[in-house]
Image (tube, rainbow over all chains, first blue to last red; front, top):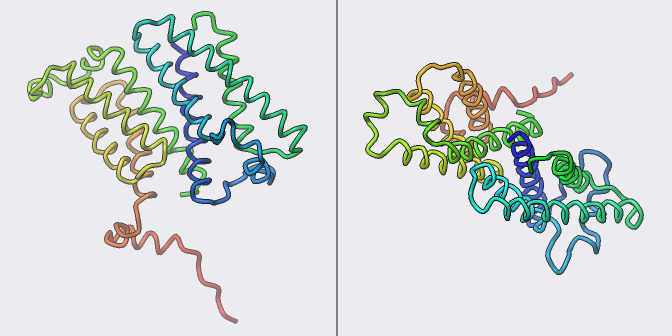
Length: 136
Length: 139
């Protein structure tokens, strides 16, 4: 239960982050870059889309799915093992993608984006929870 | 309110509403147990149905506050909702948590009120005026 609560909390924090980025992009406004000043370089780079879909939208969808599946698991909606499987797959894919995006910022773009790093940390925490918990 | 603290409070309150909504879905009968007998008698539907309705309302409110959508309106709805909860559940060991949530919701509502409403409220108009920086004195 505690693990689910943590996963859900992290996923909702992720939703609020990605909604903020989506709103700013649609309004053509600069997001507040709390640490460093390279958010614009990263967010407007050619790597900001995958298969013509903006990364912020992909992130938003991933967080929505993770929070929904976690809610299903808390409620005990059957079939539990399928939700568990989807949750693990989703978080694994998201963790790998976050690693790739962090590598892009570090080695290719040579610029750091606060919101992207926050999102990556959120995902990595989720991965850590999945790894260390036995009941998920 | 500082913009960063406003958003931290907003996300925190949203998570609370979403999580409580899910927990009510999990065990509606347990949450229904908090209702005072007089409140149960007033219900035109079963306790479970009322609890499911509350869970759906909590999740909708939580999601809309989380996504920064019409925050003033949905924090106002949430404030009324929490006041109802306080009324129908009576004073218990966990009432103090509802008081904290209520205080946070009132703070969010007041801080996110749109200008066209703000200008109609005399007290807040004065408060808003006081929040403005003092004009520089001329030498």
